Amino acid sequence: DAGVTQSPTHLIKTRGQQVTLRCSPKSGHDTVSWYQQALGQGPQFIFQYYEEEERQRGNFPDRFSGHQFPNYSSELNVNALLLGDSALYLCASSRLGQENEKLFFGSGTQLSVL
Amino acid sequence: KNQVEQSPQSLIILEGKNCTLQCNYTVSPFSNLRWYKQDTGRGPVSLTIMTFSENTKSNGRYTATLDADTKQSSLHITASQLSDSASYICVVRGVNTGFQKLVFGTGTRLLVSP
Image (tube, rainbow over all chains, first blue to last red; front, side):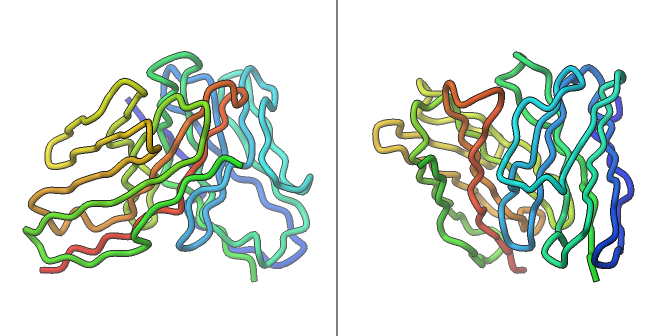
């Protein structure tokens, strides 16, 4: 049983560019959350998707957008990249109402903006 | 404001020694608290969950405690191993805080030295 998978593992972009990160949830999970983790910091909640809709959003600008597909996989899009967007982007999946909604994290995508 | 504070920020111990990590929170009403272990460049992995009625719970060499009155939790690691070197993140979930709104601590970075 594959866990949460994210792609790509590493990415280098320049300021102003756009990026798309992808996430496949753990089998049986229907909810996907995205987090941004700066070096030495805890993860910061970006948003969460359930039933193909954004259900919750953290304090991130509209440059951060996402999507969830019918197969529960998800994408995170970031437009007009800034140097400060350099971070580890984590995807976490869970199943609504199960196991106190324990999160299973992927290994993340390390984004570097130059 | 819902917050989770962890101490110490970083810690170096010798292999075989014990250590205790602290987590203080202000999240209220409280639902549960999880300790996650995050290896460098990887996603966090859940070690244990503490609910309101639980005072202590063990997972191998890891023992978590919870004092819901003082809003404090600790993670005790016994007979540390080199593989325990990681960041340990405390995550608190509140009640009625939205679809899924978790509050993350910034983590304690543990280095176990040979």
